[in-house]
Amino acid sequence: MTTINWRRTLTYVLVTAIALAIAVPVAWVLVASLKQKSEFFGSPWTPPEGLHLQNYVDAFVTARMGQYFFTSVLVTLLGLVFVLAVSVPAAYVIARYEFRGRGLVEVALLAGLFVNVNYIVVPIFLMLVGWDRALVDVLPGGFFIDNPGVLSLVYAATSIPFTIYLLTAYFRSIPAEYEEAAALDGASRLRIMTRVMLPMARPALTTVILFNFLAYWNDFIIALTLLPGEGKTLQVGLLNLMTAQKAAADYGRLYAGMVIVIVPVLIFYALIQRRLIEGMASGGVKG
Amino acid sequence: MPGGSPSSIGGRRRGDGLFVLACLLPALVLFAVFMIVPTVNVFRMSFYTWSGFSPDMRFAGLGNFTRLLDDEQFVRAFQNTVALLVVVTVVTMGVGLFLAAIMTRQRLRGRALFRFILYVPSVLSVVVIAAIFSAILDQENGLLNGTLRLLSLDGLRQVWLGDQQLVLWSVAFAMVWQSLGYYMVLYMSGMASIPEELYEASALDGATAGRQFFAITLPLIWQNLRTTLTFFVMSAVNLSFVLVRAMTGGGPDGSSEVLLSYMYKQAYTNSSYGYGMAIGVVIFAFSFLVSLLVSRATRREPLQF
Image (cartoon, rainbow over all chains, first blue to last red; front, top):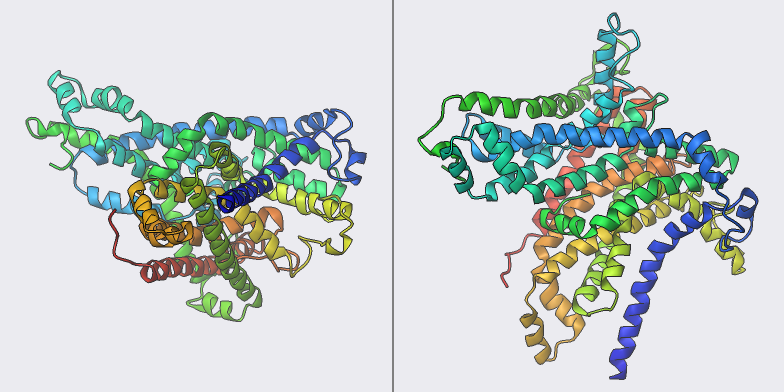
């Protein structure tokens, strides 16, 4: 019996050590964001002397994280609206209607699952630059680059394959009787789609929204490339703050900036963690 | 009609075609413009010499690809990517499997909390992870070096992100830190579906926990494991890029450069667009081939419970 207990203790120690290795750095950043500049030169384990909230003011106002926060919210929400607006109808007709070229459409979307956005972000950028150049007479200021709306459109486009794939599978799993009944009652095709099928696809929609939300909110490589001007997203803003901090050794502001980026996601995660993990397990989705 | 279509009642309805087109067109246009066209461009431009901005675009045939062979920085980026792929896969998979087995088999108290904490890095952005690791690994005031000084272990202090020998290990560590919880949860969900009777029966035969793991757990989640191997290939290529871009910028002196970050540098910063796209094609072919080989090598007859 003693050997088993010994083993169990060892297991607990090991698992706890790994959990601490993950929790401590995050917690440390949260705590360190309240320290004054001089406090960073002592031991990293000393607690902050007081609540130095000036770091947050610096991050929000001087480093413009407040403004970037707003851009990120806008871009994420718009991206979600775009992707749902185009993917839901497409997934529905792919699941339910026979039409010429359906096989081809499905294969193309499936292949799209394997195209990673990191490969194509530079071609997308150059394409948009080219469009701006072609329109220089009409819009001398340029339109496509540095446009949050265009950025959300690109977000939506790059997640279309995944979104349609998941939604189509779910629509197919819903029995057709509901639609047949609605059709007999004289409901239009559009009405059947929006009023009968959409409410039933709620679990799949939630999964899709969760994963796309995280993808858009956390992205920085597309935002970095397509918004080179002043209007940045939160992630790019944080990256800039990191570079600036390396030069100026101003850690407090950086850590406050990190907290501003981390906390919304942590709250979101705490609220929906069960859904997120279940969705991941069922879909085998690579985050 | 497969799946049972609403139009199966009384056959096709008039206007079906128009409805299908209206539903499909927006998605297909977006997909074509921002996914298909850029992807085709990657392949097409790899045969050209082009700065990306000037109108001067010359056909180079396979010139970009032959140039790659003599490019020492490219070879180094390739080696770094392969090293990350191997190290991160072995460590993450090993530790992830081990943790998942403990969590499912031994009814640990506080399981939900462990799972919650371990999955946190999966929802954080790569920039945040890079920032956290810069904070930990900072030469002067970082958590790691600061702790080592506190313990009077000054000899162990290192310039974690500034040393050519160490920087890749730091990146690898950050990658494992980031993805461990994700894979643990994936393996746990695979293990949860294994029937308890199998373990009970083998326990009666005197099998130890270790033996059960290799004789029951591992074979029964084999398909699950194979899928994650493909994920590992993708993340070695993609996650390493975003992480390196945010954490080290490829430095010092190219010692943490990976394939995609080198491609980005050539295409975007160096304005050798055609050359960069040739690198892209090579990465694409490489990850495709590795996934294929791994999938072939690990093929087994699927086991039933």
